[in-house]
Image (cartoon, helix red, strand yellow):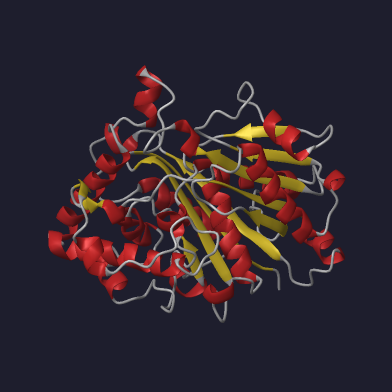
Length: 399
């Protein structure tokens, strides 16, 4: 009977570029920068990588929708390379594929790399590459802010949260992330913003103001995976290991059966439940040291705290305002600045989030470093709340 991949895969190297408007770099340059950092971190030679997965979703770097640009840019000679795409969970999908390859015994060293060069597309938001039915499946709601504004309205209505109170909790989410991003040299936005500026910002899609929305950026992130035994042989006495990777895709229940009120994300709840079972986590509020949630909008992070079981239903605004998820709180969320300060180059985001958890576990996070980090969670949400794919990954140390 299947029992998951807990502690069957070790992360021995990671790399991450600076995110932002990278007019100075092409996608191949970004891939090389992330890969070279990961390779040096792992202490490996290029020829030791046996298989690779590239996550890329929305830009135009692909050759026939293949991973050939990855093989060319990194000079990966004669090994299998594959491109994966799963909406905004694309980076986590690459990590999942490479993890499964190692856990199965197919390879000793696997590479997962996510990259996106969105600023080159010329769009102010996520670009739309298709029309007709395919476009309707990708963004059936017309715009991302419009869809997540509906999530905010439904959440407030279900739990009886006054609009002003909900907006203040959302503003605290953004305030927190900007405070954290100011300490991160790889973040796109590195300026702290005060609460009044956030609350008084121009409206994008009520109740989402300018600072409730993450930006568009370029970036790449990379992970090199192997087995715990091999990692020990490389000198890692208690390496960072994958405790769980779970992915859940909507089958249409939210919009077809009339039982969903729009106030939560069902796929996140299901993926989290499976991930906790795989990792052996009984109490995520006590067991998880850090959380990297998919904060494409401030309301998304707020609702995700409940979907992940880190706050009771209807209580997330109060937990947020009490500082539970602040950098110095009981369970920091977005300690690196999150999507809010990194932007969201789709293929790279999941692996960039894993990079922060990995850095924290190894005590490498500089000014952001927490005194004790045992396990951290990465959450991605792709599509709208009502047509979504969610990924939940958990990393920790092998004891």
